[in-house]
Image (cartoon, rainbow, N blue to C red; front, side, top):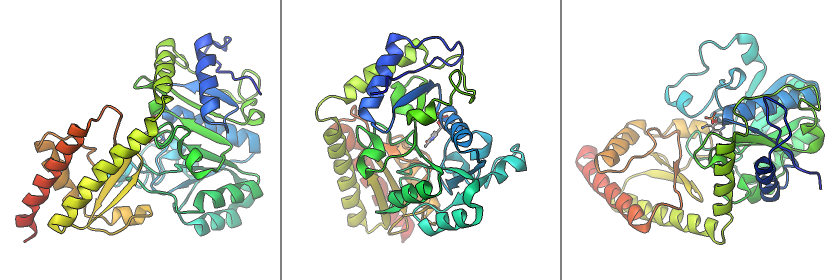
Length: 357
Ligand code: PMP
């Protein structure tokens, strides 16, 4: 087995015992990762993974998906999800057109759109980056076969497949989305849960790719706070907690409880909405029956969402403020918390009867 390293970016000093411990835990949990580099944010993780993919393939273009958000580095603010989608910005001001031109945008769950990109730009595509379970246009699941087809198409074209698991990593399953869908990416980006609330993120993958990183290789990457002891200690503690028996069954049970409660309220009051849920992440899209891609997400009733958000807030439940975000449940949410949420939803739904009449 290749020994893990988690080089400290700024000094290139030898990794500390704690960094090695964390890296070894991550490798055990996510077997597609043979080597790991610690950084401080999800933005840094995706930005650096893409630089590495470009160096490895000697190509410049990147394929991303409309509605997927991968942080705020220049080339990734093209048709992004999350806050960018909420504000309806196609791109961000301040990004040079030349940078944006290197980013090609395909449609999530539409493999033909990816095939067309490869037919047109063929050997210029360094990598495809995807949220394997999308959380930034609300929750959108990959259709059966979509991620598998991405794996085949990237492999056949000698491009890399990058899974941005900043949201699903350690959340939808211990080993993230790739554990559920059984597709192995070349590189994986992690963040959020990895630091247990402290600023920690990482990217990792096959050794032959990771070995291109400085100081061993020519791809520069560094960060003063990368692998800082506080965040690494929080990461180790978090992964130990998550490794406890039954964690993901508990999260699934909580997800089912909330989804079940919300569904019965919707039915009772005759409200139309689609619920997309994977384990502890969930989104409610009003006014539509199903959401499988960002176009369908954008077609949801945003006015109704606004009323729902404020109605819930008024009743003491603070939800994400846009349908292009996911609700996240945690182990800390008790059954009483979930019931309180369902009751608040019931009261809000009741108040809609007069509005809809
Ligand atoms: N990738 C995904 C999938 C994300 O959801 C986010 C943040 N929401 C990022 C990358 C960027 O992470 P950060 O905010 O830590 O830079």
